[in-house]
Image (cartoon, rainbow, N blue to C red; front, top):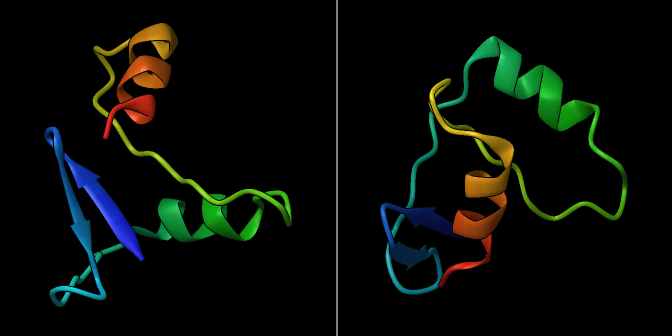
Length: 58
């Protein structure tokens, strides 16, 4: 598992990672397409274009 936070990428093969999910997060993840590999949670004041750009950063 890799987690992208504020411009930093964290890899669970190199360090422990804990992700705390809300009930809504769990519902969203359970409804993901079988081939989907990313889930993003973000503040309401960010627009979709900015989120897509941010998700492509490494």
